[in-house]
Image 1 (cartoon, helix red, strand yellow):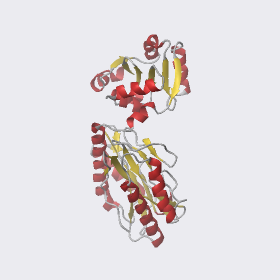
Image 2 (tube, rainbow, N blue to C red):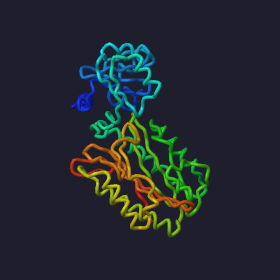
Image 3 (tube, rainbow, N blue to C red):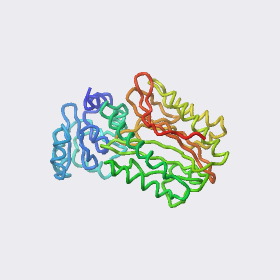
Image 4 (tube, one colour):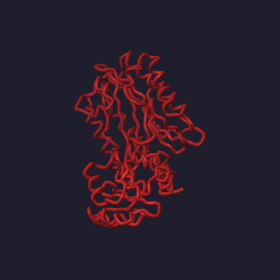
Length: 349
């Protein structure tokens, strides 16, 4: 079943006759058009149209199998209006601005506009074989770059130096960084999102490197915490605890497992080491056209793993004023278990 067919089934279950897609990743997922931020898609039970402007006439024809209407608003909305009279039309409430919603109401007065959330995102959680290969390629590149840069993480180097090397090598390979690189050394490791600073790495530091590649529109995501010299006994203990939790959660990945159970498994291990309060975020998330997407691996999630999902497993422990550790793998859910896509070695302390 194609994604459009799956979307139409989802629309029918939600009582929708049509859906106006504005989220860039969802535009790409449904249409194949890679400049989703400058496109919209209208899907009805009988058709689908990609709306973009004249800058993308050739690109839209090359990338998307959908009929394209090339114009700028309000012409795009006027083009769609006649076929929407009397229909229930969903709009993406978690993306559409208030101003854009008012435009829809002005130009589609005969349509019943209905706020929806997660309609397309839920369909993106399970990847096609082509999407799996794209993410696999992005992760292979990230592993390659990390292997090249790991010898540069030494006392005297700045966090910014390491981040710059990673970004440069990704660019040279035809990719780009999937997100703002995190390089957090020593006490800065206590910040889960400690983007690279001008801090100079010291002997005895643990250095957390959270990186990924964006390649052909798809993302990878991986974290390694590495030692410079010999870290202190307490941070070495924290590292071993996080590694134990991470590896246990990875081993438990298989179809049918509730993601909340994985979060609980890792959290209980860290709690047993006296680090439960130091684990300040959820266990992970899905990865694909966005670096954070469905499913959610948090304790309150109702999501259940299915073959074809690609998720992160990334427990961490953060001690303010002391340091922190996070270890993250990118994991494909297979028919009978899982495959770890991130192959960069984890240090043993």
